[in-house]
Every structure is written in structure tokens, then in C-alpha cells.
Length: 585
Image 1 (cartoon, rainbow, N blue to C red):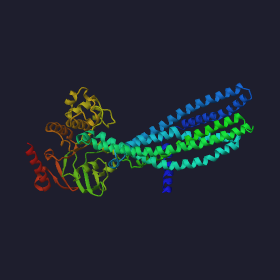
Image 2: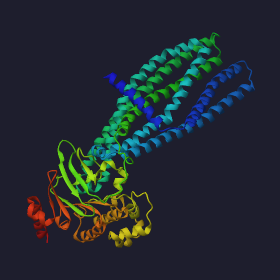
Image 3: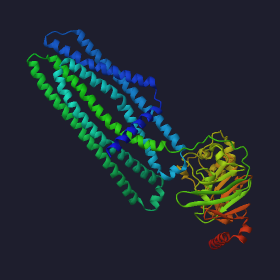
Image 4: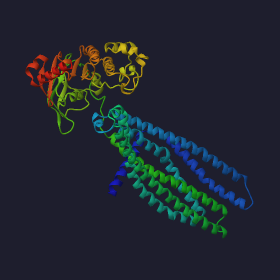
């Protein structure tokens, strides 16, 4: 088990090193920070030596102004260069974490939809925010300062050996004990910090879920349930935090105890040697000052070792994200002629073991309206997801004309598609920002207004206090369902797609809103290849063709009249719909 942990740590150390190198921090800045840190450290090493001369001169009742001047100069140089190096280190750390977050953001946006099916949003958020913060702490506060700490320790020990090797030998006897303790505690810290980051991510995911669905929580009176879930998450995070605190509580006093014990021995033994004349008072003072220059860096090194264990745990989680397969958005051909037949040929697809589409085959003629109907779970929404290339067919092929759609670049293919769903997702921002969302080209105010007019959204937009600049709240919460639908339709009109996908676009609206939205959809559908998913057959009876999906296959296709005569399932669905409409009327 220990070998496995050590092997994981070696891999994570390499991964951490690569993660930092990939952010390409400025080499001149890193070199300048190291150089300034070293100058500050060397100046700090000179101070005790000058202090020795000062004490010896005071003991001999002689005082040289040159020694005082050099001592003050060393203090000033140490302060200036330490301050400059600290600023540069913080700047480098912030730069590294900013570039790492940019890389992660780019990666998240290019991840395939399967990743989001299997991972909670809050967990991903925690990786981008919290785990990168752990790496920033390592780079800014510990990594480069390790060099100065090492230099300070090695330099101090070298000077101490020069001053008095016997006292130095007492000090060096304790070092192996301290290193063994640090190594043992480091192994524990790796496990604890990894667990802490996992629990923090779970808690973040819980909070994100609750806040994003706060109305569901309140409507369902689930406040007590979510409060209990939050308490459990906090309890788990607290538990790991206390394990981490115990490690710190064990490490720091152990270091202090050992070093203070050495200090007492050296003061006692050194005092005896001063009294016998083997050592001057200045040499003893210098020895003690150098001892402190070893104690402080040793404490820094202990904190570095705990910080690097935490950073390696964060690296493992970040590498999990970065290793996921991304969408290749730009690879492929351009779609030159979208006005061709879109066809499914023996397409099979499953989300797990159970097949959703089973050798599904059909054709969608260009410039016509094709409706897809069928019971829930028959594969209608999955068909849309495959057309949008959120997933790949496991068997069979999807073609536009004679070309498989996988040959086209994702950017070129998705530019051809307009999508209006039942939920009509909107972003926090203004109405204008939502209509032009995702478009790289500039859209004039006249074009935006024309799109809103065609979507029957212009009247209600003009009635709002700030018109197109009105803030609509998170997910468009300040608008009604019908208004959100019409904004989504205006967005599709501005995109001017060749292929239009409508997923239950009017199913959740009242009759007044449905009439307005249906008019807007009729404007949008003109001269476009349109595929409509609908449970309410009354909205698709005039479609050019209707596909009946059953158990992942197209069991029948034709016009409303043909299917009513020839398809038992369609006839059953139609009769159920008409009975429901008669009862509601």
C-alpha cells in the first residue's frame, strides 16, 4: 500500500511540475525573483557575522563605525531585496493560477457532453476555483522560497562550522530526526489533503445545486432536507480540516521542541566555552543568530512539504479534468450546401447498457417540416442530441447528402443549426445579450429589432423600462415562459440557421402564449429544414411528414391522414390527444 502511495506521489509530482511549466511563467521574472531572494538571503547571512564583530568590539571597549555602517547596509539590502522578491513571487503565483484557470476554462468549454452527464457542476467549479488556489499558494508562498530556505540553511551551517564545529555537531545531530518526522507527517498530509479537496468539491456541488434550483427547494418544502445535506457536507469538510489541523499541531510543536532543546544545549555549552575563553561572546551571539536563521527556514520547509502534499492532491483532481476527451471544434470540412437530405442509416446509441436507438433509419427532406412523435423514452430527444453532435452514434451513420456529418467541423456544422427547446435556456444579462448570444459577428440594432419583431417579442420588449437593455435575471427568471420562448426564437432567427430543431417548443405554454409563439415559429420555419418534437399532435398535423418513433426505431412515417389510417400507435396517440382536448374544452 505504501509503495502505491509513493508511486502516486511521484506521478503527481511530475504532473504538478508539468502543470506549472505548461502555464509558461516568465523565465526572466522567475530568474529575477530567485536572484533577489538569494541576494536578500546572502545579506541576511552577513548580518550575524557583522554582529559578532560588533559584540567583540564592544567587549573590548572599541567600536568601529565601519562595522555599524556595514551592518545597517546589510539590513537595508536584505529588506529591499526580500520585499522585491516577495512581490515578484506573488505576481508569478497569480500569473500561474490565472493561466491555469484560463486553460481549465477552455478545457471545460470544450469537454464533451458525456462529461457533464457524469460529473456534478459544483465539483467542476471546485476544481477550477479551489484546487488552482492550492497550487497558487504553493507557487507564491513556498516553491521558490524553498531555494532561499535551503541556501540560508546550507550557508548558516557552513559559517557555523567555520565558527565552531563542536557546537555545530550538536545542531546537526537533530537534523535527521526532524527529516524523519517531516517525511512521516508528509505521507499523512497527502492522504488528508486529497480527502479534504474531495469533500470540499462535494460540498460546493451541493451548494451549487441548491442555489440553482432554489425555487424547487422552496416549493417542495425541502429546506430541512437541504439544510441537513449542507450540515453533513460541512461536517465532512470540518472532519478533514481537523485532521489537517492535528498534523500541523503535531508538526510545528515537534519542530519547535527539537530546535528549542538544541538552543538550550548550545546556550549552556556555549556559555561554558565563553567562560573558559575557548569562544568569544561575539562568536556565541553570532552562533545563536545563525541558529535562528536555520530554525525559521526549517519551519518554512516543513510548511512547504505540507503545501506540496496538498498541491499534489489538487494536481490529481485537475489532471482528471484535463485528461478528458475534448471536442475538436475546428477539425473538418466546411458545410457548403446545407440544403440536402439529412438521413439516419441504421443508427444505434445507448447511454449505458440499454439501447435508446436501435437501427433507426429515416430521411429528413430539405426545406420541409418533419415531425417526430412517440411515447416518452422512444428516442426523440436523443435523435436531436445526435444531430447536434453532442454524442456520436455507436453504430450506423448520420449523413447530410452523401457526406457523414462527422466529416464537417463542429463549428461549421453547429452554425447550420437553430435550436428552440421547451426550457428556452437564457443567461443572466440583457435581452439584447441573449438574442445575440454566441454570435461572433456584429449584429446591428436594426437586425435585432427585426428578429424580435418576427418572433412576436418586440411589443413586450418595448413595454419594458429599458427595452432591449433590460436585465432579465438568472436564467431569464424575470420573464414569463412565453416571453422566454420568444426571446429564444429571436435568437434562432438572428442566427439564420439552415436546419431548425424544435423540441416541445409550445408544450408548457398557456393558450394565449402558445398562439403567439406558434406564429413566431411559423415565421422561423419558412424555407428551412425543420424537425419538430411534439407530444401535442395538433401542433404537427400539417407537417410535410411525421415519423412515429417506438422503442428506438421509426415504426411508421407519412402524413397525419396516412398515419391515422395505417399506424396503430399514432392512431392511439391521436385519439388520446383529442379526448384530452375535448375534456379540457
